[in-house]
Image (tube, rainbow, N blue to C red; front, side):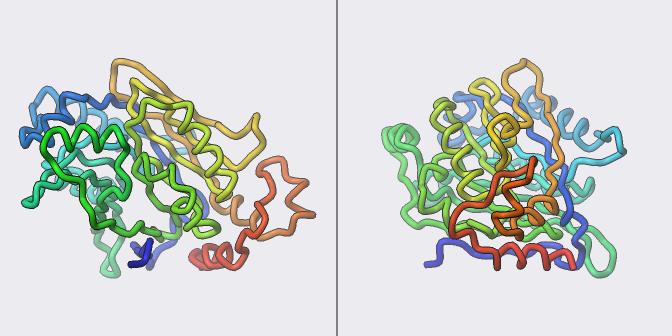
Length: 307
């Protein structure tokens, strides 16, 4: 089976081709809620839903100094109950804001605990109406700690591995990794040259190890990386393939209230830099040169999406 599939959403418009405004949700992920989900008793209380919907409302109302709106909001791994999926998809369509989040474990009829990531991506149809397509994928590599807990709860780990998705959304190209998947060098290398940015949804306490992985991914793949972790563990950030002093332009940790930070990713500047030879790249103050063997042909594929 192929390790990734290409998913095209909103090919009729390339309004996100030049830049995309991302929001990193700073929310806690409760171990109690995780346990309740795989035991079949997800926490769907009003006390949990109310602050979550308040956060969504703040995101939908946000306007930058230049009047810009948020295009895509990212939540941590296992942070959203499955029962809220339809609500999120409807919200994404209504407000025209994409959502990427980790869904809590759901146990199927075979006793397998599914850890899935959801992408709800709105787009305008040929008739002018707005629609939203939900894309789900089961995690390919469960962490050793996650496997230990689930197996000792009498549950099973899925054997079948879903392919990753190379998502072409309204002119922007990205992929999503679900936490421990990023530890695979082979799986990270699949998307060299193919993506403008990668998203990492995490529930991970080993922030130092993953910080090194994230920085390596940004340099090796030469793309932006948007990492969103549980607010208690922290280190949610945006990493750019730039010099060390400019590599992390946004970082957030902690806080009692649910909140978010935003940043605009300059996709056209990244592609323009990548298509040049080393002689011109080395003079750049914005990005480091691309690594050896970087596939320029893939850059031109991404450039063509905006035409």
